Image 1: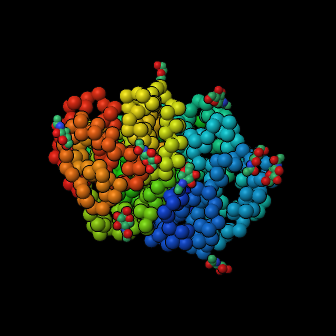
Image 2: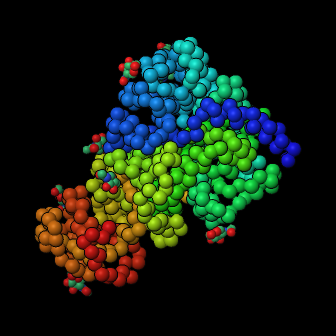
Image 3: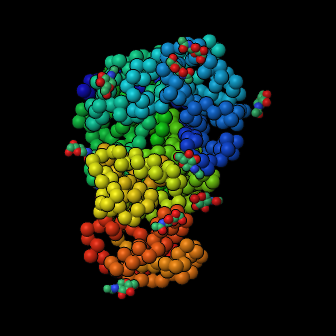
Amino acid sequence: MAMLLIIPLLVHSILFTISSAVFSPQPGICYGQLGNNLPPPWKSVELIKSLKAKRVKIYDATPEILHALKNTTIQVSIMVPNEIIFNVSTNKTFSDQWVRKNVVPFYPHTLIRYLLVGNEVISSTKNDTWQHLVPAMRNIKRSLRSFRINKVKVGTPSAMDVLESSFPPSNGAFRKDIAAPIMKPMLKFLDRTKSFFFLDVYPFFAWASDPTNIKLEYALLESKNITVTDSGTGLVYSNLFDQMVDAVYFAMKRVGYPNIRIFIAETGWPNKGDIDQIGANIFNAAAYNRNFVKKVMTKPPVGTPARPGWVLPSFIFALYNENQKPGPGTERHFGLLFPNGSMVYDIDLSWKTPESEFRALPAPENNAPYKGKIWCVAVRGANETAVASALSYACSQGNNTCYPIRAGKRCFKPDSLYWHASYAFSSYWAQFRKTGGTCYFDGLATQTTKDPSTLRILQVPKCNTMKESTQENEDIITTPFNDSFIDDYYSCCCNISNLLFHHFDIRLIAFISLIFCSSSRQQYVPTTPPGRNSK
Ligand SMILES: *[C@@H]1O[C@H](CO)[C@@H](O)[C@H](O)[C@H]1NC(C)=O
Ligand SMILES: *[C@@H]1O[C@H](CO)[C@@H](O)[C@H](O)[C@H]1NC(C)=O
Ligand SMILES: *[C@@H]1O[C@H](CO)[C@@H](O)[C@H](O)[C@H]1NC(C)=O
Ligand SMILES: *[C@@H]1O[C@H](CO)[C@@H](O)[C@H](O)[C@H]1NC(C)=O
Ligand SMILES: *[C@@H]1O[C@H](CO)[C@@H](O)[C@H](O)[C@H]1NC(C)=O
Ligand SMILES: *[C@@H]1O[C@H](CO)[C@@H](O)[C@H](O)[C@H]1NC(C)=O
Ligand SMILES: *[C@@H]1O[C@H](CO)[C@@H](O)[C@H](O)[C@H]1NC(C)=O
Ligand SMILES: *[C@@H]1O[C@H](CO)[C@@H](O)[C@H](O)[C@H]1NC(C)=O
Ligand SMILES: *[C@@H]1O[C@H](CO)[C@@H](O)[C@H](O)[C@H]1NC(C)=O
Ligand SMILES: *[C@@H]1O[C@H](CO)[C@@H](O)[C@H](O)[C@H]1NC(C)=O
């Protein structure tokens, strides 16, 4: 294996001069738009400038954004959506039209430099699309040429799951199902057109899946003393990021393309996540992204152990926390900025601000896994129609997911949409979380550490004033629950459907709970009432 190293090292030193002369190492930023509360494009462009981002990547070709980027010095990456890859690959006219509509009107005043065909196509589309990926890339390149647009590199971002092995890095290999039919022709195209292998690299996910064996500092790019030696090459790694990037380098080399440059199409660390997600906090996000900027901005370039000295052009994910991204909570919290435009933590992508000038960070509180129980409940105040359809979806999945909430069964009462949905979401999640199921349901569900089937909150309104008691503290009585109280209360005035959707104060809904479902209701010990502001 040591022999194999010599050749690429020679090639590196030649390419190094070329690549560092042409490509700035200053990171760009991914401008995702999956939020209903994000600033408009012109404002976003101002914010991108204030972060000192060198480039911006968008996930489509929104004309308002491309227009707002006109006459700036920000290099731009646009994207052909996954949905039209088939058409682009099979229909040259279609490809030409896409370029005519999305590139030509903005080029060259908007510095469009990269055109990505699809996003993580191998990971996120059905396998019948995969075969169209490289032909679509070829067609787009041809279309660009036909409009005499030559400065735009065509590529496609891959996630780490294009690899079937990545450890040690020298074992890096593309998956067998895609290596020959897709990756090889893609690399051939990238090589021929002097484009990049665009790679999404998230040490966060690799670490979070095995936080016992991988040290957090190693994932955060800040370990001083942890090293991993690749037994195949003897190369010594001091962070997880390098390990992941080099695995891809070795995979490319294995199929005969050792010289294609890698472009980090996404990397980042979430500033917040669900209760069951480890290490997603502002402290770690700031550490990772600042260390990343420092790493790539160091002069002369450090590269990675297998490619020392290579410039690593990059985009950090992401500009904003995006509240409409599906999946676990981390997906909605990768932003450097809150939707209101203020910084989640200080960062300067040009690496000109000394770290001592950054404001202090909140201490991390979730760097170890949450040990307690977690339930998945419906979000109070959510759209009833949508909750009803999510309820019916959840019930259609898994084994007997909703049996206990059927009429007459143990958990039918309280007979309300809110509690039925909460039961169904918890039941669904309990069955599917191991295989990637999330407690989200388009924002209709949320995790809680409060057992919905216990009644820890002891303040409830008086029955006869319930409907009116939205005012602060009005007619609130503090009562230790007991069975007879619950039953009485339920029968006397629990018109739950009214209550649940019109009073969102937790005190008001505390009494109607899945206590009816619990087999251990005798064990409830009244606890002290939480304060007014407790969650
Ligand atoms: C950009 O600059 C060009 C050439 O100077 C000018 O014609 C155009 O109006 C400018 N566009 C914007 C949006 O400022
Ligand atoms: C893509 O091609 C398919 C099959 O020819 C067609 O049904 C579909 O409408 C096309 N999509 C677009 C966006 O034109
Ligand atoms: C190819 O795309 C063009 C432009 O969208 C469309 O008019 C044409 O019908 C498409 N051809 C085929 C065979 O789908
Ligand atoms: C696509 O996936 C299906 C099942 O998931 C499999 O049967 C089929 O062979 C795959 N096709 C290709 C081209 O890989
Ligand atoms: C590395 O250093 C940290 C703190 O200085 C220490 O806690 C840790 O045990 C060291 N790890 C190794 C592998 O030496
Ligand atoms: C912006 O939003 C964040 C998070 O919601 C909040 O903490 C911050 O105070 C807001 N900043 C401004 C200026 O409104
Ligand atoms: C509630 O959800 C339904 C279906 O998801 C949607 O059609 C409707 O517009 C939503 N209503 C409101 C007020 O958002
Ligand atoms: C449902 O039950 C079947 C048979 O016991 C089992 O194979 C399957 O994994 C179960 N599904 C879930 C989601 O638990
Ligand atoms: C149960 O609670 C009700 C209402 O607070 C109270 O009147 C009753 O005495 C309690 N019963 C027992 C057995 O504690
Ligand atoms: C609950 O309230 C709704 C609407 O006000 C009413 O139609 C329904 O009859 C009530 N149910 C009970 C059990 O009182």
